[in-house]
Length: 199
Image (cartoon, rainbow, N blue to C red):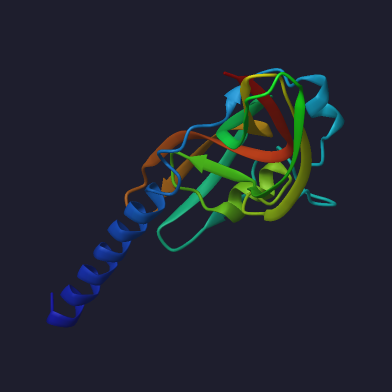
């Protein structure tokens, strides 16, 4: 084997390893939203973002590929709603009087869709199969009035609610002929939730 052939094989091998490594890290440590039935107030405010006007949601057999591997979508196995708790966004008070007071706040947030796969599949692959752009984000603003009882402090909490899909997928490596089987999930933001606690 001549020197040029050895260099070519070395470059291909390193590129293959880097491709596997970086793709394998894509959102791999993220967890899906907490599964829960949304309250009626959340459903009334539903406004999903990033939805395609047409798509191939849930369709098997459509795949993405490059010189080293091909990713395959093997089907959705669960759909549900869930939330991400964002914590306290405003503190109203303390109200040190015997009268009930109120304060109105404008809450602005960047809301976004998201995804994760254990095989490192990219966003275009996931978006094509769940029916919305998993990278979409936008700015939203809401007005919320907090009632403050006498001698109390009120904490305004915020949650993001999502439609979630979990799916099977796998990656086929051309150089080795092996397969890596895994799972993934995608979340589509659709509503805010505000609630209060007191002290």
